[in-house]
Length: 424
Ligand code: AMP
Ligand code: GLY
Image (cartoon, rainbow, N blue to C red; front, side, top):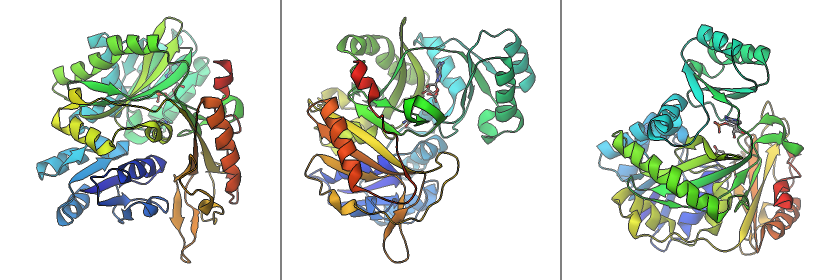
């Protein structure tokens, strides 16, 4: 088979790496890819939002299956463009990807179908939010309706912070049209867990759980980022909680989408808060998490191409998804200054020190080749160093040993990824 992957980050690198292990695959392309993905796939310089050019490429190269890693092209309708041209593609179509693309849609869906989530109200004008802020119980959470790189969620401790958030989202339109509609939510407390599932529109299979670290600095301080590190499994996501979520969240969501005429085929990622009153859905994503995929996929035993095909063909009920009884930790190496401003183009040393056979991996999140063919930094998140271990503590120790093999200018990481493991 020939496979095309769409995207250019660490998530797409681990997807490419996992696909490369399939005995059914002869050739992998990635558009646009990065310098690390180039070691497992041929990178082609087509942007992830250039749907017609991507479909032309898939036709010309006789691609058997396209896999979309990123949210933007899914929400933008890449799957519809491919399917209209008879091209096989893994991921939800535009009607289904709205599950991630609109928070107002996803909240209304949860309310209608009784899927547990925070109390909320939806607003379409700054005046409405301002008046609601007067009677709100603080803290309160304001969320831009649309995609905002994970940064459109503002936790407000008082009315003044709420008014500032309204200014940022709705008046200054920091995230463009994404902030024209705003969801105001009750603030929940508890531990967060990411649960990734595959679905074929009728049934679902749960991947192993993971926990992300969204804040930039140690101790969960600093600004929100795309994710500074992950571990899998989460010891807090117990078998009892898993059973509860299967009964009250996962099947209900799949059925709700089908009932709405928005059958979802692909990955549904549940961002859950384990509150004292039970799990609540914080958000849905229509794709693998980044950097959750980097700790979940290396632990998956199945041929991932079989799973993708079962989701497309509606045969997931016949599939037994299996995970190794081990653990993984991912430490993100970022550029100093991320997520605000940072420099790019610095050469990276030590990449050869990951032979791929010692249970450590270095997936590339933001790298490129410079004019001399050297691999250089090319993003806020640069590398994802992943280690497998018999348990979480062993994986964490191994990951922090492995990061020492890498060096580049302005290198920055959190030193406490997996701190919650010690409280388990
Ligand atoms: P979201 O993109 O909706 O997952 O929100 C990003 C982050 O904001 C989450 O990972 C949580 O840490 C936090 N968050 C979102 N909604 C709430 C809520 N209702 N209560 C507390 N924290 C929240
Ligand atoms: N790591 C969170 C996300 O992928 O949205």
